[in-house]
Structure formats: C-alpha cells, structure tokens
Length: 128
Image 1 (cartoon, rainbow, N blue to C red):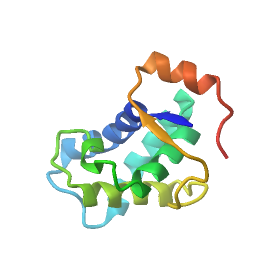
Image 2: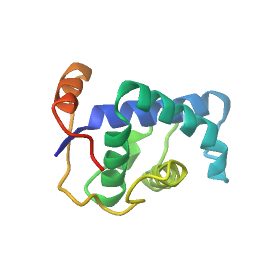
Image 3: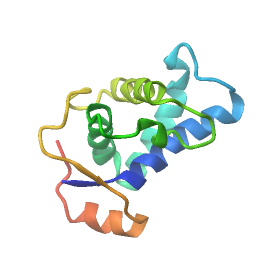
C-alpha cells in the first residue's frame, strides 16, 4: 500500500510548527503536545487522512531506513530520536489501532502532491 510521505510531513509539521512557535525546545513531558495532537487529529479527520496518517506513523517508527528528523517540520532541529518519541506519543494519544507495532501489510512511503494523494486515497478502502 502506498501512503503519501508528503501528507505525513504536513500533519506532523503542523504539530511541530505550531508547538515551536511558542516554545524553544522539545518538552520534557510530551503530554504538553496533547492539545496540538488533538488539533492534528481533527484536521486529519476533516481532510479524510486520519486512518492513513495513523498507519503511516506506525510505518515511520518501525522502518529503520526512514530519516525521522526529516518529518519534524524543519523549523526546530529535531533529532530522529526526538521525532520518534513524538510520533510514539501521537500514536498513544490517539489510541491508534495497532499501537506502535509495524503495519500488518507492506507500506511504501511516496512523495505525492496533495491532489495525487487524495485521488490515490479515495480509490482505497480505509485501513483498519
């Protein structure tokens, strides 16, 4: 199954960018991100991306080939481990199906325009 890496970056970037507008470092207690995660969830649900976002996040944290730092939004220099911790917290906060376990089906992360992603997504059955 193909999932848009661009979509994942957009939703994660929304989370990190809005947090780092008012903060200069990663919170020691990741629960400080909860309201930002709730907003990300709402926006992903409204866009029709939520089930694929959760599946894609599970792929991110379980694929050692992925540069997690590249999913941090680019404003604050997040290291891969910090981004992994944030993604795991997102999955726990949203009670994602499957938790942080690797997806049961093979996932390929691909760069896609928003239009290409929506067309591809709309042609698939929602995961889960």
